Image (cartoon, rainbow, N blue to C red):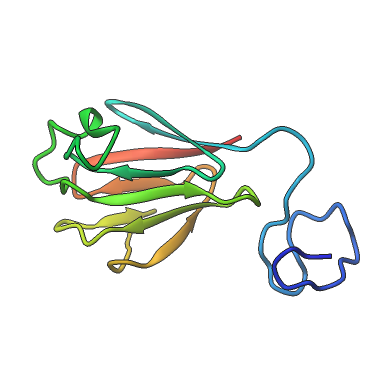
Length: 131
């Protein structure tokens, strides 16, 4: 049964639900989201929300972005849900959050996938790795 829409699964080993098309939890290790930025790699575990930005009071990874003046103090948030789907939300940044070149509207949650490019403002691009 799909944990989201409760549809009966025709193939219990499927990667996504045929009804709602959401990724299904897979057996195996705990998923980890990694974003490789030029200034370092960030890791996000299931259930963790990580604020990206220059303000050390709001972002535990602020040192990754302090050299970039066009990255907002509280720029965007990353998280990994229990199904292993990674998400990003722009937190009202001045210069935008982009997934594969597409700007996210403020406050909108967007899924990110392995191999996607996540860009903060004009200068900071990271590669998404899901494992």
